[in-house]
Length: 422
Ligand SMILES: Cc1cc2nc3c(=O)[nH]c(=O)nc-3n(C[C@H](O)[C@H](O)[C@H](O)COP(=O)(O)OP(=O)(O)OC[C@H]3O[C@@H](n4cnc5c(N)ncnc54)[C@H](O)[C@@H]3O)c2cc1C
Image (cartoon, rainbow, N blue to C red; front, side, top):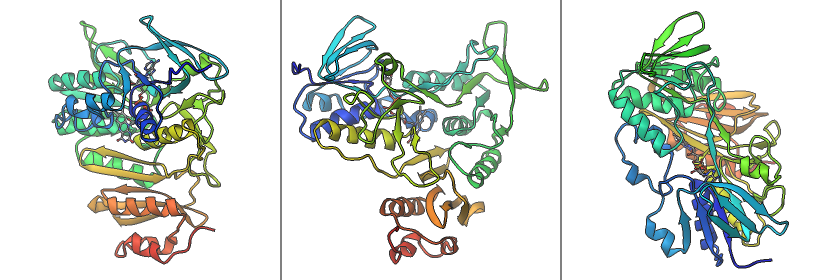
């Protein structure tokens, strides 16, 4: 029973804002309301661990859109309201209630609730100065504390941890990274790339410990963090500890609605949740692999700007009537100090690796193959190769491994005379 309440988008960030603007681009004429729990107008998160920490960009420059944009496109942006419950009928319409008691009626629901940092539950976790980095307030707090800090410990050698570690190092801090796994960024890149980043960060003065077993955070008499104790008794001094051990998708509203969840809110290739009406996009979604192939996971959760934007666009298409299967080449970037890593495709299940370029010059690519076909690439300070492989994957082309290693010949040229995938 539609009452022209339009769509309610819960979560005002990359995916939510993209969904609203794509809906308007596609001619969606009903009301569009975005409700976000944060007090800031929607902003880009990637610079928070990079330029923002280093003082190169200010918070004001990070907003996606000006205030005028929302007015001009008749998008009602409501900030500082956290939705805590939703009643919804089988037709998809319902009412959401915020913690303040404010109610939002809708004909169609979208969940773009993102993710929260995974917490490290050990002794001393509550000490002042043990921090996480997900939003602008976290970043502001970290930045302020970094100004006074000498010793910075980063727990977790994933993207956010290494980016923040590199930023702190650029600010002249003594930086230690403690990683529980035997290699850095192990969930996302292959061994050659991990090995490179280990050497490169160490060469820049960051102390990296792999296979680190953290026992507790130690504190001073004022309840401030003072160190990180490792198995074996050694304690790394710390004025600030940043914990970057991954994120957990925000699924609580979806679970309460009875939607299928499991490492995110389960959606189909049209970005529809299990009720067939609610659309979901971004870090909170568990989706069918948008670049399916043998040996790759059938479903996954992608934590990237690229996925948040593209999946939100797909959700907008679904809402406006057409159904287009969500297909795209996943890609990601990570700036770690002066090192730019760009990745395209998914390397899971690779059986061959070709390194192209010179590792010692810190400009090279690691190309992943499966059964003789390119499936992914990690490019270090090498945007030309990144663009080439992204295009290659999108077009289903291939470059044989025996030719790809010749960095004297541009990949684009090697691709030019190659056949489409069978
Ligand atoms: C420090 C940092 C650096 C990053 N760097 C990169 C990078 O270099 N490259 C890259 O591709 N990606 C990067 N990312 C990841 C990227 O920012 C995310 O993939 C992207 O923000 C996902 O967007 P989203 O809209 O799905 O979720 P989010 O950005 O997590 O936004 C979800 C929003 O929903 C709100 N919300 C949740 N529940 C409710 C509720 N019940 N009521 C109201 N509002 C709610 C949250 O407050 C939040 O504002 C980085 C992330 C961080 C934190």
